[in-house]
Length: 231
Image 1: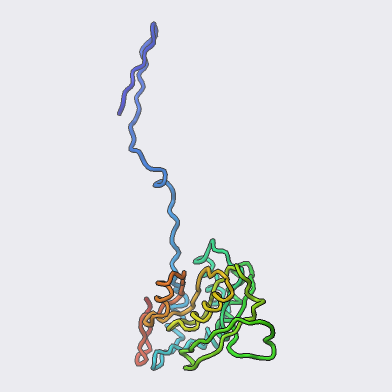
Image 2 (image 1 turned 90 degrees about the vertical axis):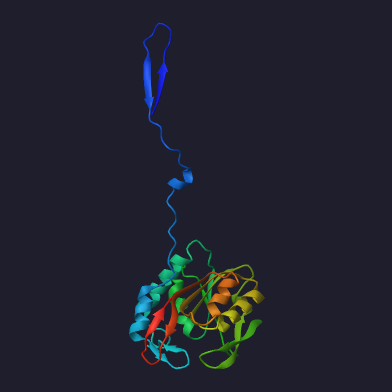
């Protein structure tokens, strides 16, 4: 407590008592922005319930993700990515055929309905004009594919979000990154539905500085028991 005595000539004495308080930096009074967790419990529960673990590190989720598609789940996934990448400029979403297309199209509704571009894995008569291309190795198919995107669909300086259903060793995503580098577009982030955390694809991309957000990261899985453990 601090007491201040004030007196003027020919006037009564005034006593003012001030309560001392501890100084607090202004920044401490601000509410900290809550970091959004990348994991998505709904997806993890669906994998545990309907996924099938097979030998060789294979996780089958074809009943809801990459053969038969659960659109409500896709919508919730898109909403989660929108939260994770909030504040980032996204002009287009880039994915690769075939399994990433449905997920990317539904997710785009949460990014102001931006166009979705998907890289094709084979030449066709419908592909005309100048093209960006590279080669990728598919863990699932056990073969190498040509990956192609028409140059008119990716313009230098555009901000792009990459989305795919799975990440294992990261070869497919590396192919999309190479195409982005050829096109001169800016990669704002990478959204993955299921990442196999026991393989090194995701960590390599994070170490390279990419903002990679996986909605479910599988730590381990046992083909004998069918149990899937998440990170």
